[in-house]
Amino acid sequence: EIVLRQSPASLSLSPGERATLSCRASQSVASYLAWYQQKPGQAPRLLIYDASNRATGIPARFSGSGSGTEFTLTISSLEPEDSAVYYCQQRRNWPRLTFGGGTKVEIK
Amino acid sequence: QVLLLESGGGVVQPGKSLSLSCAASGFTFSTYGMHWVRQTPGKGLDWVAVISSDGNNKYYADSVKGRFTISRDNSKNTVHLQMNSLRAEDSAIYYCAKDKRSNGWFGSMDVWGQGTSVTVSS
Image 1 (cartoon, rainbow over the protein chains, first blue to last red):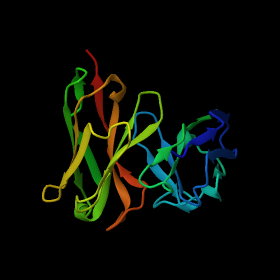
Image 2 (cartoon, helix red, strand yellow):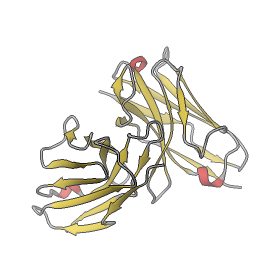
Image 3 (cartoon, chains in turn red, green):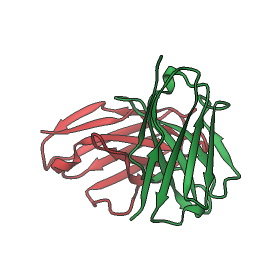
Image 4 (spheres, helix red, strand yellow):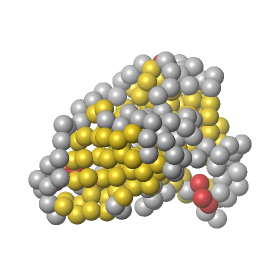
């Protein structure tokens, strides 16, 4: 099983600041990594797929980068509505799909 | 509008069975693989099972293999999850989710339902 570890567990930033979230894989997942956003009481929403491709309708302030075992989700300028938990997910080891433990982003 | 609506959750005793359903609308259901993903309250996400667009291929997480069965009815745009021999650790919110790619597998999910809650308790 490929284990995904996300860091930090949580971060608190002000509107307009830049958020940098990390996802580290226990073995290479090439570029087969996605990011999801989950707000309280809601289902997850696909943000980024294959490391750096924004899903339909996702604002440009969200960007993804990385390959192999190290990945980053960047929110360039935080908006109040970006308060959520963010998860990474790998599909390299199909069909044994796994998710990271999440990073909680709080907007001050 | 693309929608997934789960139903069938509830409280069930350990060792008993429960069947979940997910009704899809707004897209060509018969061309997409469908997943079930669960989330323990306050915890992260766990992939449970996936079924191919034609229903012929099914895969399961090790934790549910042999106990859960995924199926679909393309004539009714529904996907199901039959859960047998339930355990306390199966308690979670269960989401159905659409695979991103049509007529094949992608392995990420671009549409999710709102979830249905399953509690396994005596």
